[in-house]
Image (cartoon, rainbow, N blue to C red):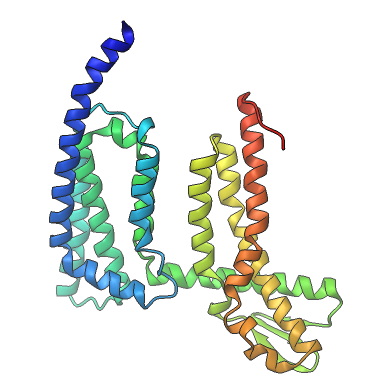
Length: 309
């Protein structure tokens, strides 16, 4: 009897939800038209950027997560006009700030311009979702909605600071690897002196910021899909930083050892110029084992049965 009542209540909700989804499609098209120029510039930018090439995949990932988790998302539509207005005001304020700034003589880099325009678009989209579905549905879909923030390119200043952090920590970690291996070395800031070869300079391309961002996104996605406890999700995400530093330091150490023991010309070898994906894949192994370990702890703490193979 109760299930019949639930079904009778759920049917109208699904009808309303389907109608709101259709309206969301219309509003998304309108937003795409209004932000057509910035979106076109963003696509061109990502196609020619090694750092932000992942951005076109972000909306697809968010949509996929919503689809896979649709059974866990409420069908109760309760539009939140206040939340929508606030999001619209923030989005309009960002766009207006850029427009007024350019009129006042700002000379923003293209990356910073795309940061502001894309962030404005994301706020407008969040506002549309709040206005159509309400806080209950948006709370259930909070992760895929928040994941859209990765579609916003980081400002140039942020990239510079992150690059600097990983350069310094990677150089220090590489020196530790050299010391463990017994290779004489002397580090001056970002330069590492090795016997018989020119000094190695840990440049911005050695920071591995692109692969680190991708691994950070992967950790958030993996934690959301496979873990349930807050502490296990946080552990997986926080592990990305030391793993990235170890990966960068290990890569520098390998290249340095090849230069010392084989030939200084190894600095121009494919393992240096194009070996990034190899080291990224190598350090996915401990990341995967950490995810498996945390998932088992997650299931054990929740009292669920874990199959042993």
